[in-house]
Length: 146
Image 1 (tube, rainbow, N blue to C red):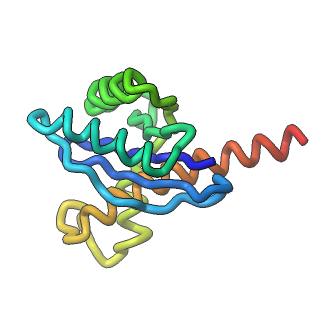
Image 2 (cartoon, rainbow, N blue to C red; image 1 turned 180 degrees about the horizontal axis):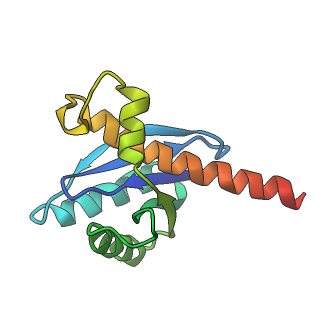
Image 3 (cartoon, one colour; image 1 turned 180 degrees about the vertical axis):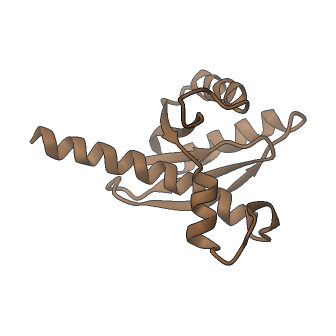
């Protein structure tokens, strides 16, 4: 049972996938995104979901610390609706500064996320962090029920 994690960005969409046991999330890569390539990005993400036989897509829910949607959230909602229209089950996972957390974890020597030459790795790693949080929270919930 695999899950797909998404860190949506207006220029790049970070993508991660879980292992079969839905225990660990792994950065997979990025999909280019822009207004002119939005349909291509949608198709590519759908293809990745099919290739990995995912049961659910987990997208980062972009809100600030007070719970107010960030400006990018409107685009996230549109992308989520488009994925659902393609038959994918999509849920949100709260994400706070996942890109910054990925930068601190995977490239601590970089002072600025924008200055990082490995931006694609960081975007995919941010997707993995979002997915890992979802997997951990659901596994914890399973243990509490048993």
